[in-house]
Amino acid sequence: MVIGIMQPYFFPFLGYWQLMNAVDEYLIIDDVNYIKGGYINRNRILVNGEPFYFGIPVRKASQNRLICEHEQGLDEATVNKLLVTLKSSYAKAPYFEDTYSHVKEVLEFGLTPEGRNLADFLDNANRLTAKKLGITTPILRTSKDVHLDGEYKKEHMVVAYCKKRNATDYYNASGGTGLYFQQFFRENGLGLKFVKMNDSVRYKQFTDDFTQSLSIIDVMMFCSEEEIADLLTQFTLEEGYEKPEDI
Image (cartoon, rainbow, N blue to C red; front, side, top):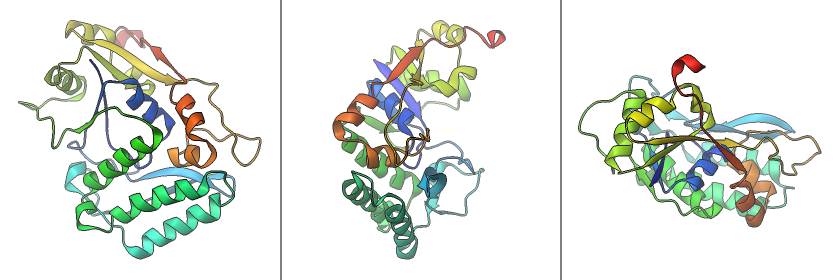
C-alpha cells in the first residue's frame, strides 16, 4: 500500500491533490505545531490578474500549539467579504457558479459549532474538495484516526506512520527531496518516491499569461471536470537523493 502524508492546507494548489490522487491512503497530520505565514489558513488566487492571498483568520495563532488545538475565526462579515472578493475576481470564469457555490459551502461550515476547530474546518474542506475533484483516496487524520505509540520527529515520524498503516511505499511532494532520503526509508523496509508536477502543466486563465501554483480554486474556476481529471495525472514519480551527503 502506498501512503501520502501532508499537513492540512486551505484550498491547496494542484500538486497537493495530485499526491492525494496518486496514493492508496492519505494521512492529514494535524497534531503537529501550527506554522504562521504558511498555507494552513490561506492560499493564493488571482485578483486583477495578480496573485493575491485569500484566507481565513485563526484565533490566537501560535507556533507553540498544535494545528488541531486552534480555532478559526470566521464570522458572517468575513465570509461575505471573501465571497465578494471571489466573485469580483472570477465572475467571468467559465466554471464560476459551480466553484463559487463549493467555496461558499466550505466557508459557511466555518460558521457552525462543528466547524469552529481549525483542523475540523480544514478536514471538511479537504473532503468536500476531494469529492468535487473526483478523488476517492481514503483520508485519515492523525489526531483522530492514527495514533503513534511514542514521540517521533521528522523522517522517523513518517516511517512510524507508514508502519502503523502497514504501508509498503511512501510518496511525498517534490519539495521534500531535501528532507527524506532513499537509504533511510530502504533501511526501514519502505520505498520512497516524490510526486513532481510536470513543468508542462498549463490551463487557460483570463489571459495568455499563466500564473502557476495558485489555489485549486483557480483550477476549478477555469477547468472542466474532465480537464481536472487529466491535470491530476500530470506528474512524474522521482526517486530523490540517496542520502543527505548527495544534496
